[in-house]
Amino acid sequence: MSVAEPRRIILFRHAKADWPQVTDHERPLADRGRMDAAEAGRRLTDTGIAFDLALCSTAVRTRETWKLAVQEFPQRPKTVYEERIYEASPGELIALLNETPDDAQNVLMIGHNPGIQGLAEVLAGSGEEDARERMSRRGFPAAAFAVLSFGGAWKSLEPGVATLRDYWAPAE
Image 1 (cartoon, helix red, strand yellow):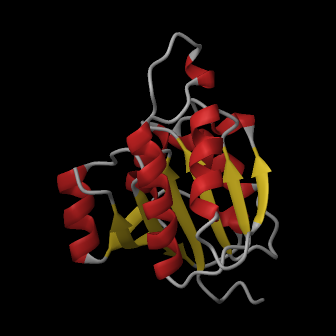
Image 2: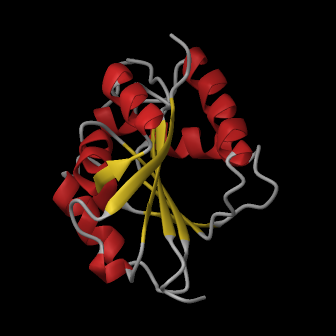
């Protein structure tokens, strides 16, 4: 793979979580979240992107979201459960993505707000007008994802270098 080929980052917020009497890290998905996670998996498959690597927060709701979404994929990518995604700022998420091996072209990150939305906004220096308008109008609700592309090595990823290519959120 040449670094001249555009890389893609898919930022995926976990699906709707329940609020039982557990710590925030241990919150499971709500019934609606389980349905939306599977639908997001189908929509991610529809993008036609072959994912090389999935980086998933260690929180229960992100792991459950990923487990349901990936069932819809034709092929499961290598998955790394990364505790640094939980409660991470956009800058911390960029630092994590900078560590991505150069042989990975398409990376899916499953995480939390406000970090995931903030990262999409910080990275997208430009974008498809329709995707930008939808993301601006909808924000980043549970189970939403944004598809961004950029050129260069992962270690060169920084604010403003990516293009927002697509955005999807479940119907409210």
